[in-house]
Length: 437
Image (cartoon, rainbow, N blue to C red; front, side, top):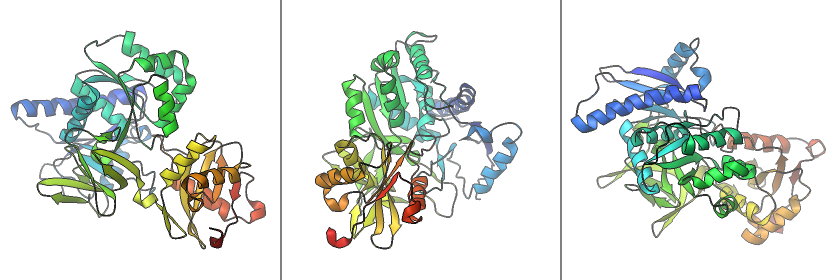
């Protein structure tokens, strides 16, 4: 590991959504904000180099924190002096999380751009784990707005009562700030659960100035229902490497440029970009266009007329029978034309097709699988319809609410590896051959 002459102090702080964890992480993030603000106003740099690393709570208990710190240090292959915060990616697609080094200047730039896009500085309800970038950014935005965060304790999963109490604190609790706007950041699963809860919670959500929904693709139906219910919902596209969202409702934030490379993947220029990956042999893939630095991503996009549409990750694209199939497009079609409300589409290796298009759905069973396939075929073309369906009680998710794609693939592979007679009754495969298409 290459480090500057003055070695940093690595400070592990607990993530999650508990009050204790958020309070400790916010304290560390706020201290960095004080250093940043002083340097911005006076040019005076802080004397010690402290790198804050929000980590899962289990790594931060006093008996194990020394070991956790040592293990994190062993993963580091580089640590540029510009790095102030280390955040780990979810690894939901590859199963291999990476350590992302961010400067506090990038985090602040992201927070300021968010407030500019949403109409002004605001106080944020923290409903996402703060060791992931979406949750951490709610704390940074509160620092920039000079407001304390409001904590919705959701460590045990979504809790309508806990979120209601947090909303109540926003509007009628201690420290109410009438000079600040009221904001919330959540993932689609939480939004769906909040709409189902209805009642007082929904009344409060209608009073929020903005609800950011991101972390994974937001189903069109869910957005429609939320907006018809009177919620000011905004979709967010971004990643740990960009300090969170850089595109809201398809529009890049102030100071952000998103263009498509020759392969159709997004190139992102933003003041909120990471310094570098800190683990592994390969660093971040930056390219320069004139004096602007862009991050090369694996996200396929269409960018027209200033609007960015994210199609999904290039490494998620399913190549089946020689066709390139976007899982997101197939999932959207299933949600649009069937009664299904939770769907994830993945590709699984297959000797005949190269990859099999498989849909994992939350449903009592797969008795309607043939109908679902036909309906998608009518919309997209039969060659794009799923060839397999697996019904589950709940989609496997990361702790940020993203479908865990590596787990989903293994679930389907497990069923395909069994003799037909031993496969689950909740698994269906269309016995098609290429000539039928």
